[in-house]
Image (cartoon, rainbow, N blue to C red):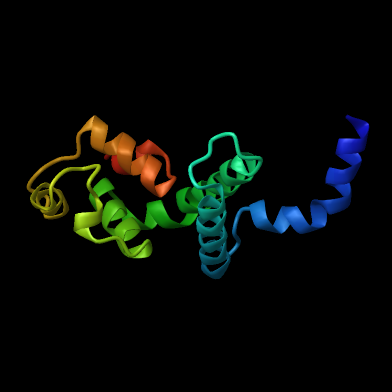
Length: 135
């Protein structure tokens, strides 16, 4: 165990910047890019040694979003629109919500998100479910 810790300490200066909470929007964009690349490397293998790195990077992104992005948006619908734009997602890509018609109704405020939608969107965008719930 001591040897593992010593290796981690030795390499920490390379790991820390990758999992640190972004200080700027550019840092945030770099984190999202690194997160996407890492997720592609893992290819949905939950037992990958990189799973912990993905969790740490996701938490760092979530911290930045809570502090800088979500408060600026003001409500769940605006947060969803922002995340769709940020991740360059098309309505047809949001199959976890439903058909493109359902997605359109939600984005136009004609239909509310369900609990299932909230869970799926939180998972897809790696944000807290609270992002999609208006207070």
